[in-house]
Amino acid sequence: MIKFYNTKSRKREEFIPIDEGKVGLYTCGPTVYDFAHIGNFRAYIFEDLLRRFLSLSGFEVYHIMNITDIDDKTIRRSIEENRSLQDFTDEYVKSFHEDVETLRLLPAHEYPRATEFIPQMLDMVGQLEEKGFTYTTQDGSVFFKISEFDNYGSLAKLDPDQLRSGERVENDEYGKEEGRDFALWKGHKDSESNVSWESPWGNGRPGWHLECSAMSTHYLGNHFDIHCGGVDNIFPHHENEIAQSCAATGEEFVNYWLHNEHLLVESQKMSKSEGNFYTLRQLLEMGYSPESLRYTLISTHYRQKLNFTFDKIKSSQKCVNKLRELKRRALLIDIDAEGRDVEKLSSDMLGKFQEKLGDDLNISGALGELFVWVNDIFSQLDNNEVSVSGAGSILSTLNTVDLVLCVINDTCNDEPSEEIDALIIARNDARANRDWSKADEIRDKLDALGVVLEDTQGGTIWKRK
Picture 1: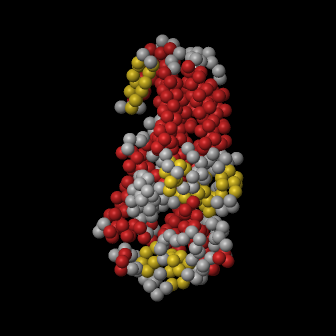
Picture 2: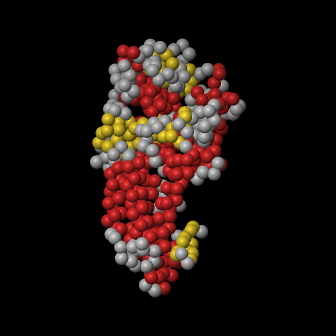
């Protein structure tokens, strides 16, 4: 059984997808007005863990992540730099995809950009207007009337009697305790240069909240499984998404809402004024490895505040090194030996590893089970109690774990190393049996896969060409 904490109900719920064996997943992506910082990647790493675990559990996941390339911030920054909106945002879209690759995030199946979905947004505004959920102001802006939507505030647990309905807010983000009619479509302002599109209400551009509703329902349908984001998105962004989506379609919108907590830096809120604001690129320039940063961001439960410290990065690197050392040691085994049942130990650990993750992505519990097993296996290796077949079990287990952690192997996205590791073990077995012809044949297969072997006094090591 898999359970997730659903923000909607404020409790753990068994996960049951709408379509058996399939999961529709929507995650709030970057607003491309600057390089993504580690607070952003705390959310993206959590969502990557979720997707990898669902895939490991046998689900076919269809993942959509939006790119907000039009809002107050992108427009303001592009004007400040005297660049077109597309030219300005293209730079940061490119950098975001580079950062995704660096941190080994599974790329979303679709990355819709808001500026590509203006027709769908206009259609949704039209639907809402027809159903009486909107009003239009003199400047051609269209607002959603929250007083007409009975369940407004249900996600954020707002008191409907205290919502300040009837007042309008034009900016995309507003105070946490406020509830105001929000802009679906914003009439064009001279201060926004030439950024506008034609609409039945006059030239203008979409409100931020509308963008996600149009893009998510386009790919996943009006009703889908999981929507993720940071806790700061609960209100107003996700609350507004629910209101406009349900009002427009007359259907349920999302079954499970998963939100990650904030990231702190050395126990302080991250901000440029405090001098503790870091992008991924800055940390890489400081000499920290991508795998240590990924491990740091993934190893704290998503619903707990993550205290990002430089000591924690160093500790994470040690954990990664230990896992990689175990793999290296297992690959060196080329003799048969008597030992404990490594296969059962590994199978039991994997069962516990997945069981912990199935409990609302309890990653700390899963890592605890992993390193109990790691220490046990190292003890057997030190006592020469692991056979060639046992080594194969160790490597297979590490590969399975790395489908989630993605910090051990050279790659863990689309080229798993199980085949390479199995061939190396088979070659070592052939060499132990003095079957030189078979050993050479396997070496040729590895060469065809782009793998170079080097036989040293300490055993066989490998690298890619």
